[in-house]
Length: 219
View (spheres, one colour):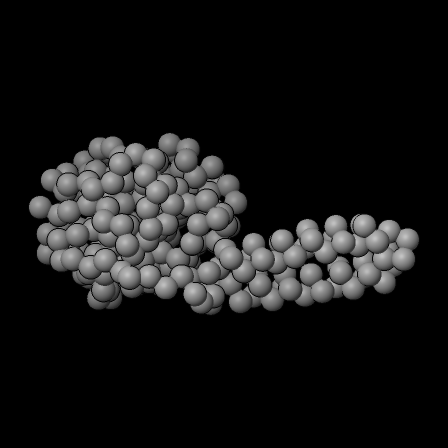
């Protein structure tokens, strides 16, 4: 396991906060309120360990396949439905949405190999990530990857806690399946819009792993 580069600053700030709070607690409280000093230590240590865990990038045996769409994120499948895409395709698509809790790995991966033909950031609201309107009203970053068997749109969507979406791709870039697309901080959602003839390989409420679970098969 490694720590994602997006976490270096957050972990450093949390570590400094942990040190300052506990030094002050030990100096001013330990003699009279030893129990409170230990409570503060446990709570702040829990926060530090949570922040470190949030930015973890575990080593995985990645799944690859030319006709496969691999899950771009860890989490739980919360939507499998046919939708009309207003943003790019202007027609109907199959949408599969993955909800990422703060406990999930938050690195996002490219679901297919291909060329980036669309990349657009949208300002928006911070509705809870499972809200039906979060796909179109929340802050989000949309990317379309052109694959020989169809174009795939991936939306990184901010949630109630997520305040920063990071996307590393650019239009014209060639990307490889399961390589890094970006990162979303502190709880969020990822939508994948597929061609209507794609076969969805996941089920509602299924827990999936980014770079590992097969989301769909392209016809």
